[in-house]
Length: 235
Ligand SMILES: [Zn+2]
Ligand SMILES: [Zn+2]
Image (cartoon, rainbow, N blue to C red; front, side, top):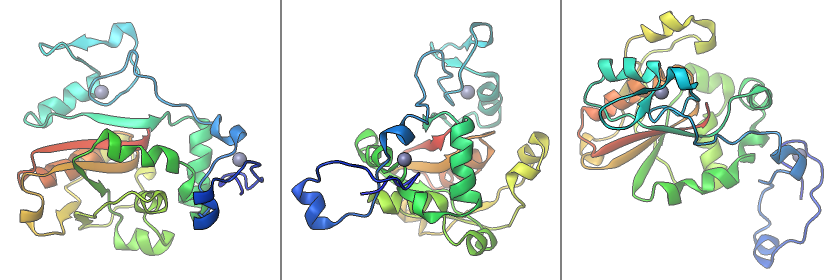
């Protein structure tokens, strides 16, 4: 068995199940696993999990603490009870990994965080998992949806409920102000009845401004799901 990031062999005793199934390599070696920093819960915004300095903390009537970004979102989307969670910090190691997986398009890395993704159905037991879709242009360019691919390799069931209606050039190329001003890029691609009274977990790769997820959530919200939570690999 090889580490799915550095490709070095992992020496371990395989279980009978692993031997029989001859599972694809979806494991990280010990050295690669410690490269990434899990997000701690302490001193974090209750909306988006951003780490807060004491001076930044602003408590609201609900005893929760929100960052200034989330207070802005609450003003823009007053009826949406926003709560975002992530596995890891988007630090240098994570950026390097994204560079190889997403931008170079090394699909072999899709299994790097399989262990984490496999924990998601337990954390959100009655939710339907919906990855953020790519535009057709982007999908053709990269060859795979980076979120769907990770879920697929991890054996986590998901469904694309949304499609992109317009192609925008890569987020990174826009300023924050420009990104925030973008019009709704999503439309529902399933029968609205399918999401009525459902709980939905929207999944993205990285949380940056939150705009993408807010657009996606507000598109779904029109069709009366009971709850929409959001999740990303890193933030
Ligand atoms: Zn490794
Ligand atoms: Zn926040």
